Amino acid sequence: MSMTNYGAAGANLSINGITISSFGDTDPPIVIEDIEPRATLKRGTGGGSVRLDNVTRAKRLTIHLLPGSDEARQIIALDKTRVDFYGAFSQSGSGESLVFYSGILVNRGQLGRGGKTSVSDDQFIFEFNDSEEV
Image 1 (cartoon, helix red, strand yellow):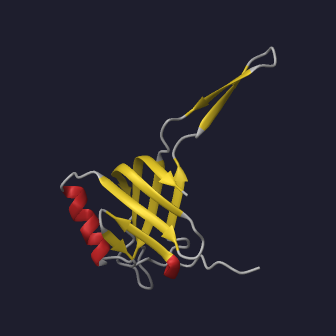
Image 2 (cartoon, one colour):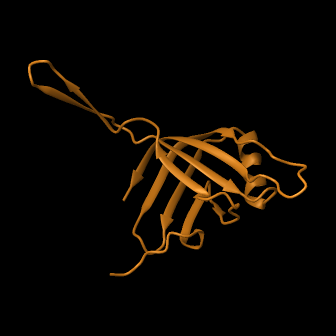
Image 3 (cartoon, helix red, strand yellow):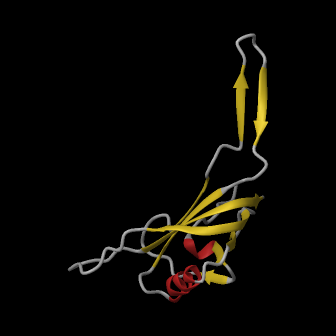
């Protein structure tokens, strides 16, 4: 049985064509999650049920970048122009891949600055209306 390396070196992420590689020290630097359930089960009192499938796969993508990195500045500049965001993620060696469509930058995390020993990563939280995953 072989091992798969899930480290940042094998994480291939791009947002609007920007290759993201300046990950901060928050572990993990990339978090991908569903925003809403993929399906809902409505159960009846008589023993029957109905399945309600969601037609989209809405995703939330959170990334942590080194403060002041080129990628962080480019994302901030894109957000100021109010463009729709799109992205792609794949993990080398694992076969995982996701593509994100019709997204927005919904929030930036806290900016911990002016410390004696550390500063916080730049955190960006995107939400995408739809996605495809393998």
